[in-house]
Image (cartoon, rainbow, N blue to C red):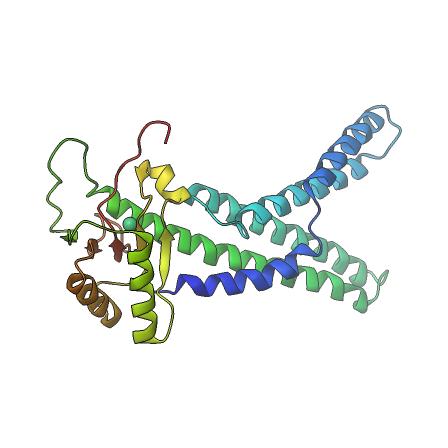
Length: 274
Ligand SMILES: [Zn+2]
């Protein structure tokens, strides 16, 4: 199981790298206005059509950059948003590859020097790193979605008995109490035992839970398989301290991952408007 905290470090480094050339949203708005002006000029035959295509590509790229800023470096994503994020990163990579190909033709024709290609290669490299990060982030969001789907399959229906969930995992009600201070105790016990932080994958409600329509407020998911040594230790600690949890082992049919330990009572459906 991957450590989710690790990605934050990767993303922080990349955001420095990325922020340098990232235009602000207002710049995109201004560029759109200029594009419309240019379009009128082209239609009137007062500007070359090629200039229009270039301006359009530039805006599309700036919009993709803005989308990446919201998603790749933002906090909370759904599976659908992470697909958009990957598509934007790949489009940016493609545009830079095409720019390189055009520059290479000039070099091959003897019109430009070999050295003029180095900037294009750097741009490709940067876009490739962005694209790798996007895939990595999407992979984690997908794992969160698997976990959330597992939880939804055993969620507590209002006014009826909880469904039998034995095949999916084990439910332990403990004393039914799970507060921020309970969680703080779990966190510090884990850290002092293993010498590293508890790998929390979802703290309370996330975009993934909201998209699936259930209430995960006041609950915490930990990206640990219940049967790996850390999971065995954690379950024992939770049992000894009568802390409610759900150990999810079995993925939903056709899904390969999603095993984790959920701290707190089983989630219920999200109230309307909540
Ligand atoms: Zn959970």
